[in-house]
Structures are given as C-alpha cells and as structure tokens.
Length: 397
Image 1 (cartoon, rainbow, N blue to C red):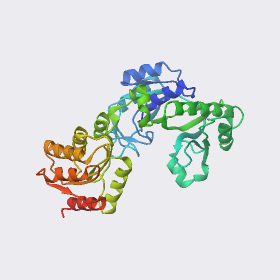
Image 2 (image 1 turned 180 degrees about the horizontal axis):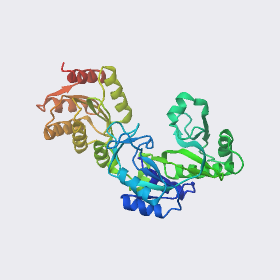
Image 3 (image 1 turned 120 degrees about the vertical axis):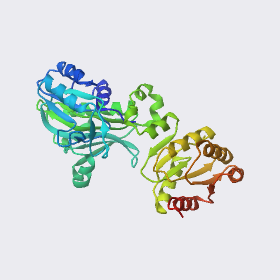
Image 4 (image 1 turned 30 degrees about the vertical axis):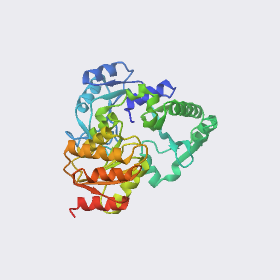
C-alpha cells in the first residue's frame, strides 16, 4: 500500500526522521493559510499523487506550463500555485498518458540546499535482509543511476539479529563524502529511518532527494513510503491512510473482497489459486502468444461467492477477450470451485470464452459438474493445454 508524501513525512517525523515543516491543503484558501503558518520567505507547493517525477510533469490543461512542484515567494503565490494544481490532471513518467487528478497539495517550508543525495531502505530477497542504499545522485531516479552509473550506488545490509548501528550510517556517510557535523546528522537520520521501516512493516522507504543544508543538517526533501500489504492487519491506523482514489477501481474492488488482484494490459483474464501458480499461468500465456489481463489469486479457501466476485472483477475489464481458470484443488476442492464457476457464469452471463483446468482434490467430480452444466466451458487437461486453448479462443481459432 502506498501513501502520499505528506502522510509519509508525518509518520517519519514521529520516529525522529528530520523533515521540513509543512501542511496539506485541499483548497487554494487552505494553501494560503498553510503558507501563513510557515516562516517563509520561500514556500514549496507540491501536488500530492502516488507517482514520482512530479516536478518534471505537466498538467493536461497547461502542457507547456510549470510542473507539479512549484516555488512560491509569497503567501499569495502559494495560493495561486495551489489553485493551478488542485482539480487538474498531472501527467508524469510514472502516471502514464492518462495522468492523475490532483485533489490536494502539500505546502512546505523552503530549504537552504547545499547537496542533494539519495537514500532508501528495502528488503533484499537475495540476502534476506533489509538493505540501506545511498547515492550521491540525489534527485535522479535510482533506476537511471543503476543503468548509467551503478558504481555510485552504495549498499549496506543489516543483520536482523543485531539491527542497525552507528557503523552502518558512518560507512555510507563517508562513501557519500559527508564530513564533520553532516556525518552525525546522517547517522541519526539512518537509525531513525530504520526504526520506522521495521516497526511500520514497510516494503520501501525512499528519500529522494535527501538534502544536506548549508548548516550541515540532513533533511528529507521528499519521502516515499510503501507498506507490506500482508502486514497491514497489524496496523489498522495505517490502513486508514489508504487513498482509494489513487487505486485502479478493479484493484480497489478486489481489496474490498479480500482478493489479490493486479490489473495488467493483456487480453486473457486469469483466475488462479496460489501466487506461484498464478505467475506460472501468466508466463505460459505469454509463451503461447498472448498476454494476461491480470494477476488474480483467489486464495486457498476460495468458495462460490469468492469465485463469483473474481469473475465479476475480471469481466469488468473491457480488454478481456477470454478467461482462463487454473485451479489446483486442496483445501478448496475442485467440485466446490466447479460449482462456483457454474453459478458465476450463469449469474454474470459471461460473454467471453471460458477455459477451465482443474487438478487436485475431487477433480473428477469437478469436471463432471462442469460437463453437465450445459455451459460452453472449454475443458483443459493440463496447464499447457489450457493456455493454448485460451490463446486460440482470443485469436478466434
């Protein structure tokens, strides 16, 4: 789950991470009032959307104008900047051409910047540890740095048994060329950020840019925080930060129905139980010449109601030209899944080809239910057969 910059900064502030003073505003008048609470004379007005590259982005109603991050030299200018952003659609590298509607802005105090750096924490699956990454190339997307200047990315991993300590921060600080007071500020910043990462069950915390002020302080100029969805049950307060307007409507629908769904841009809708099996299903669809329209894992306890909801979400995607169901029955027995498929097909009046592959507990009974349903369900013997039949259905064969 992603959150907005202003939400991320408020959370990080509680853990001692140095951030600038700022206030969220939903209207130009609120932005004016927010700027009035800050010392000035420089203010920064930032569009709040779940996407990076806001400063270099452009609004659809003013493609040649300023981006989604603007400097203001007075309270009046802050209000004008907010008025230009709120209610407009901002297009960045990460939003796609459709862009995202700006419903609020963050008005922040100006900063006397000496250097811009990069800092992030994430879980590295290769070493099964939290890794702290830093770079001198602040303000640049880390993917670009990795592609063109990989030697400028510094990494240290943290042993979960001992946690973060001063030497982690000092090693990175010296690698970044920090000195004097800057080193101490950086070490304190890293330790606070690590504490927040662990206690909030984050998937990533990224500060880009992390700035060194002329006074030698280290401050987060931007902040991106994403949480591990699987751990949100421990953080009901964090779930309240979710912005439903930033989610794909189908993905939001899936979350509300306890389904694991990610929208893609293909033409074959997938309904599978188990994340690994879902990935294999998507791969084999590509192998045989088509593309998956989604990742959808109905889980190991799928029942008729859940299958119906899954079908409804899949068919709400107008790009779907066929559906491939790939179920390995275990706790969720094949006959129960088959019953759900038949009921969902009748209730939703499916109008696209439906290919079903069942395997596992009660598979013969499940196949019998499908065969006797009277529906035009295409049965498959194995995964390869299912993928080939789904691709053939899409291509009109």
